[in-house]
Image (tube, rainbow, N blue to C red; front, side):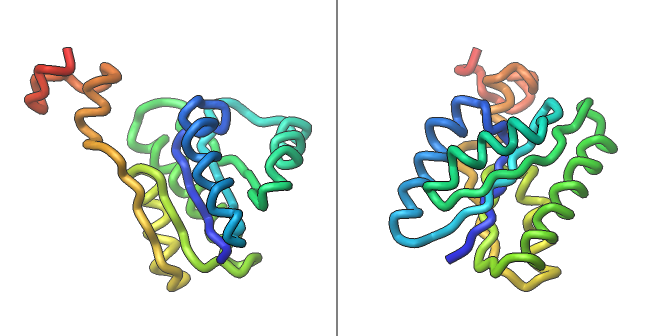
Length: 151
């Protein structure tokens, strides 16, 4: 099975290194191949991209990047999501993709749109309560979601 696994986290983040890549490596044992577009906050040089892909090649994982929103404005997020939609769409037209897997809500927006357009199944992997996670990181006022225990 060929799978596009979209992550909002950077390839350099510990979460991707410890959880996402471990998860994907484990599934490649069963013959699955993965395309891993990640949202990157900084420009990735072609040399760095080649190095990352050469490290992942033995595990049947091909990595690519999407630009992370340069600010928290809705327009910048929409621009990043359009870029993700474009990248996923290109993968669907150039590869024989069987499934789109999105890790978290923002990549899911792009993945769901492309999924419907190309009639490819879509899976959302949301492992936590989004608002509580944002409150924990200090990006959402704690009292606004009633999670006083996070302070």
